[in-house]
Length: 238
Image (tube, rainbow, N blue to C red):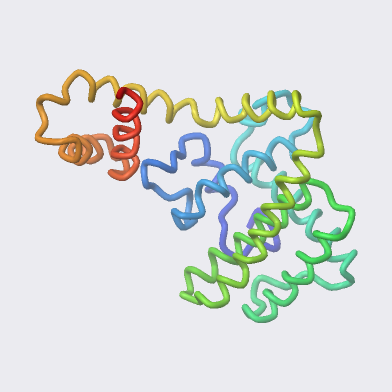
């Protein structure tokens, strides 16, 4: 394991797939359930910037996945241990029961909220929270999963607030815009190509739904995503 405290997420496998991962295609990122993949792919990217903070821009991507996973795993471990030390508790082992782990996670989350912890430490905590959520979900422990999801929502809100305070408004907007453009560039290219194809060939299909069904099967995309793109495109033309 790349991180001592993660019991479900396979960090190395996630980084092997991260650059090619596209949520809207319906595929999973490593063994992570699809509904959590988009958020966790963002977390993994963000933590890589912190783990390789001596590198410029996306230079961390030239390193092998095993090395990225090891560096990010160390960062997560160190962050969790700092929060645990402040909370005066020990980190639960990967074999600890769901009840024990959730109890300690709740204490960690409370101390992270009120302690002097930075954006990256809270991001590490959120990955740990998601790791437990994925594990609980895989075991069909839905009631316990809802408890963990409540903690995730709070951490997510705090991360947004911390990020907002970390930079001036102009710099924050520039950084967010640049990262978003890089992250969504492949999706935007596919979307633009599909919209152009719809404009050119829509007369050859029975309906919008027919086009979306055929194209989603042809290109391995989620039907709902293709339909939403086309519907929004048509509304914007009127």
